[in-house]
Length: 235
Image (cartoon, rainbow, N blue to C red; front, side, top):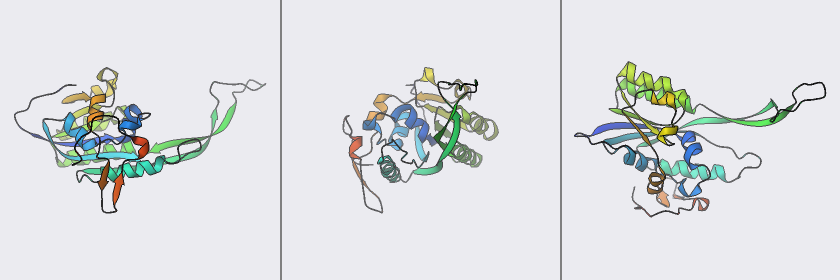
């Protein structure tokens, strides 16, 4: 991971594509899902004072065949994130639609027509648009020196270019994958820094097992048992 030395502190706003981060690094690894994104941002941007972390996701639904407790764990996690006053959570939506789609692998009927089946298709809507809108508004108002985006979604190329070209903002790219596997389109946005999240970063940046908000206690889900070194319980 690249690290730099700075003679003065830069102000950074961070924008996390939560679903992209989850799909690339956290899915299938419950021991690191209780991720402290504020601590992660500070670890990856040692030259900066992190002013805000904007976390973009959507409320998941328990579909047939999936874990029925997963929405409750997500709600606990979003509550836990919100205990840090720098973190704002922005929600898109999951849509579940009935679709008629071609079978895979392709099958043909007796007359040679590709066969189709009705499926239940889940799609997330809004997170990338929400992220693009937020970063452009912030850059237009010049609220930070650095705009750091955690994603590997090339749909965000244009807003990142606009931050730099139209508003003179400096973009930092944080990849939830190895640098060599990061989107080439995103690399071409000419980021000030390009860094990746590694296993040691995830293990080092876990939230305390128990937190408190205005509703009450927030407890790390038992299914997300942490298996790494302990860190301070203080935020």
